[in-house]
Image 1 (cartoon, helix red, strand yellow):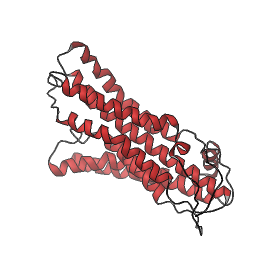
Image 2 (cartoon, one colour):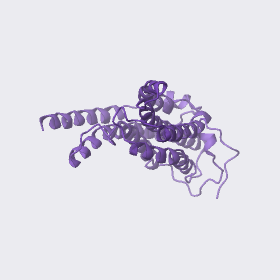
Image 3 (cartoon, one colour):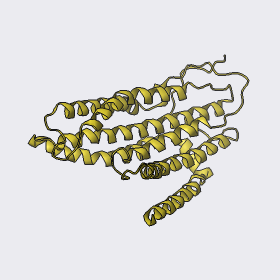
Length: 277
């Protein structure tokens, strides 16, 4: 109970720091974010951009904290050992993804009498490397899980059952389609007819949202990949025991994907003139 109280206190401190840091968006930092996305801040669009950056930063951090703390509390409630089984670090990236998604959905956009009818394609809002990477990682997860399932003795030396690997294979199959569907939905949400500067800001925000979702989703996929790799390293096949090295590297790669790729510069390639409907 003492340890639990200390953990809850630490969680409260982290949440407080997240709230404080999430609110620190200056005009300079907003201008830097905009310049990396080919956006010029104006009197019309600056409140929208700063509001998004402030809210998105706050919600992503709270999502990360929730991913750290809630699974531990849930495990305690079920009488399980925190940090094992299904209560791993993947929930951190799930929390980050939910925070990024809600930041986009909850954004208050300028009111417009009509909606833009300009077609918006995901490929114009998301880096090709991230769009393709989601499918590649999904394929790697399924391939590794399949290999672990068909390799004799996989996981036996580590006392690992194959039930988690079956779940990983299923999650790998649906991960990329679900991520892409979510990203396309965000890109294609109604967009009001507003001034060109507000429209450009709206496009940059949508691009940032889908990029954050793609990066956190890929981070979760990488962590999924580690599970069958660990299973393969626990087989009786000597050379497969080296799979423990890429399995360990998956944790580092996941944090890199989420923290770095989610914030890369990208200029939206707006297809054609704005229309109305």
